[in-house]
Length: 437
Image (tube, rainbow, N blue to C red; front, side, top):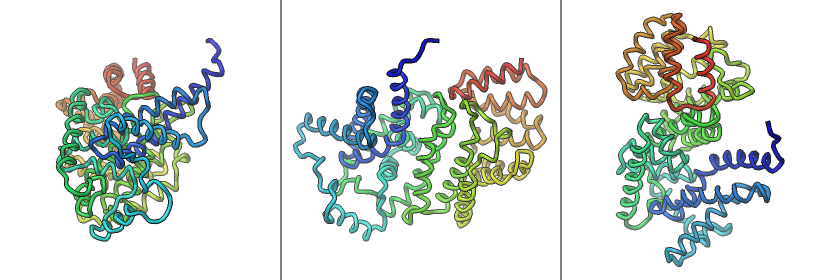
């Protein structure tokens, strides 16, 4: 193996650091730019942030990382946006707006206070504000989710397609359509820009979609469908931050928001135990529960308690209850699978989701009925969206291993290898395949 030179090593280190920084800061930078430029120039905001990342990759390996990398990216992105605006012939230099400078209360700040007094809602977190903006009811519900994941989190059409089990080209068309509708909606507005922020009514109207966006954002970080790592912690932890911000703020607090925060906190508590020292998969039954973050688990139970004010349970309540059951079990053998089966039955009835049905089958197998669970899994084959869903094939393979059918299990693991999934999961599947033949 050839020696790695010092410049090559520095490049790899900086590339890795920049990749993590870009994932963490991208949403905030795009949100700040959209707040300045308006939704009509949303693609410009996305482009200049990406251009800033490319510029960093060209400069930092040779000049070193700046003392404040996030501020560097922000400044470069803003300068690139300003250059584009000048080429468009826009004379007003938005970089000089009073609201960007510290000092006495500005007219914009007074306007924010007036808005709060009149409407009772002011979303100040830039990323949350961008999420609420993208969740325009004039856009189809699923398109709202796709648009927000693309704009705020920077996921590609392929990433989003894997999450929604749809073709990449179809997702690209839906993203373009959603952006056109957002631009046309802004053009139809009179008076204040829609970037001023939602009113109390709009917050409540859009909150269910915002919660779902955060849920999906965490899902993509918790179990990415491609890439070199098992968990994109930057993405998942940002989704967790947003969920807690929504649950904790007076304007957005609700029983469903608390339930979502509980769910994500419980899931995040297991991050350190999900992978081994080499980044490989550690299944739930094999995890060292001493590595589970007890502070987060306690926080999860606090959010779950706050969620009990719900008049009607949401899927977040049920999924949080499942996560809480795992968090409270001292070891895998002590898991109350019968209790979980009841929760899964309610969740499946509520959502009609074949993905939920797959997880319910796994719970049934661990409760002591692998034969019945496998028959239910086989019946789910009628859902086309599961054909390219690796966890479905993995579940079939694991149940077939429990039923002492190694050859059939191997066929399932081979099918899973053909699906979009991360490199550590692929390595895990190859190990399972080798053990089954």
